[in-house]
Length: 134
Ligand SMILES: [Zn+2]
Image (cartoon, rainbow, N blue to C red; front, side, top):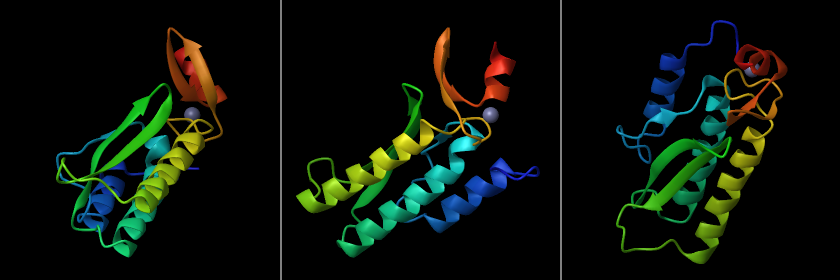
């Protein structure tokens, strides 16, 4: 899935430039390369949803991380006391759920088809990378 010459730094810096309106510089991409394309799609979807609903300047990505072998991408209102309207909240939740379910089928390291592996700790990996870890 990822090209052989995949350049993580280039890919993530392009993502940051493209989504600077909602992606604060301090938010890290705390996952393996294999999930970065899923993150790219999710950021585009989230940004479109926020733009459409007039929340683009009032919301931001709070965290991008792995949890229970799945990708989590959290978008929150900048002002912690405010809440997304219900329709927007539902849309953002659907985007997050879709990213999570895609990540549960993609190797976190390379993006090839993967599944949950648990040898000591849980991670979603392809056959090759599961073999490397064993
Ligand atoms: Zn892999």
